[in-house]
Image (cartoon, rainbow, N blue to C red; front, side, top):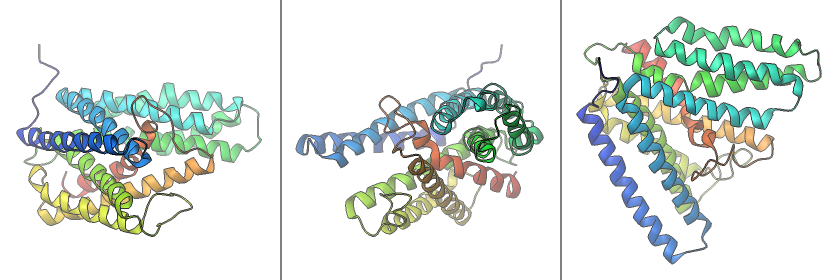
Length: 315
């Protein structure tokens, strides 16, 4: 019987070793800062982020070991948690129950099933076309017309972001790229590392140096210096990782910049939605700062753009 797990490419091993080395250093620095500044909020925030990233990277490594099946199942669970957080926040009327149930019990499993069997046509159309039209119908059949447009739009948006957009992450494994067979996991690692590294660098720069807020109405933390520094760092890192991709250094840098900017837009938009509902975090997952959606908001916006850029120009 064929094994369901698959050895990771040697390049992936080197990337993970580098990530774990950085996390180990960050853990040591965080412990030292905590000892010297026991009541400092920024230090607590840093240590919470580092703890969350230890968990995330170990889980990702384990999922990648099981290749397509493991990665798809992992992001199915992530989508479920993110969808739950989103719907918990926007849910207002009992009459929306059937539409929300359709998201959990029909759209979510179907979307990831289409990813797993590599049915691109249905994967690309299920939620933007069929769900977009049918979810308002289900909501209308409840008989409650109060704020129907707003309620339907919120449910549609939740399905798009937490199911459709996130499902593009494992879909990267299905791309057929010439001379890059069985190495798609490297593209997935490239996308996640670049987007999240840019986000971490933005946080570090704005925490250390402060500066003018880029959009205080949406995010009280993001500064111009931190944002531009994060973009620059992500672009440089992407160029440095070009050897694990089918890209040239300039192509890798350009894609790194695009997905870093999209990740920032995702963080900004999702922060605005949280503020409009009067909350600071989407949830409170164990040993993580905030909820699952707080951790993957940048990936939600970056993954579809990355997937379609690679599919259009390289696959």
